[in-house]
Amino acid sequence: MSEMTPAEPMTQDNQQKEKVAANSVDDVEYSADEVAKVATRLTRVTDLLSRKLHQEPATYMDGVKAFIRNFDKIQTTSGLLSAMHCFGKYTGAATAMIAGRKRKALPLLPSA
Image 1 (cartoon, rainbow, N blue to C red):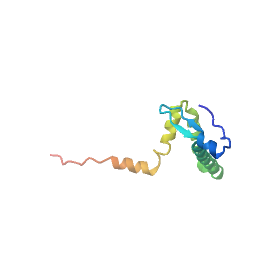
Image 2 (image 1 turned 120 degrees about the vertical axis):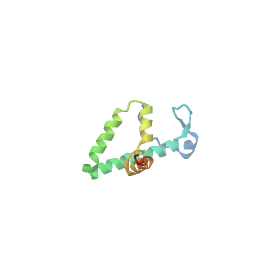
Image 3 (image 1 turned 135 degrees about the horizontal axis):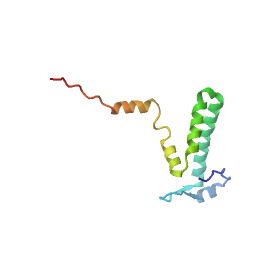
Image 4 (image 1 turned 45 degrees about the vertical axis):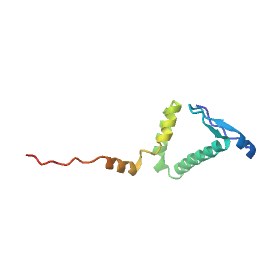
C-alpha cells in the first residue's frame, strides 16, 4: 500500500483539469479536488479520535489500542477496503435490535 502524502497547493484551473485514476477494475477517475476533500475529512476523523484519547484516556485507550492492533494486521488492499466499508455497521444497540427482529419465536403447540 502506498503512503499518503499531503496534497500540494493547486490553482483552481489545475484542480479542475487534473484527474487521479483509481487502481480498480472500473478505472474510475477522481478529481484532485475530490481526493483532497476526502483526505481532509479522513484527517478530521483521526484528529477527533486522537483528541478523545487525550481527553478521556480511561474511556478510549483500550478501544484505540485494539483498533491499531487490528489495523496493523491488515495485509491486503481488499482487507483494508473491507474493514473501511464495514466500520461501524455491526456495533451498538441498533444491530442488536435488528437481530432481535429477525429472530422470531416459534409458537408452542399443545401436546396430545
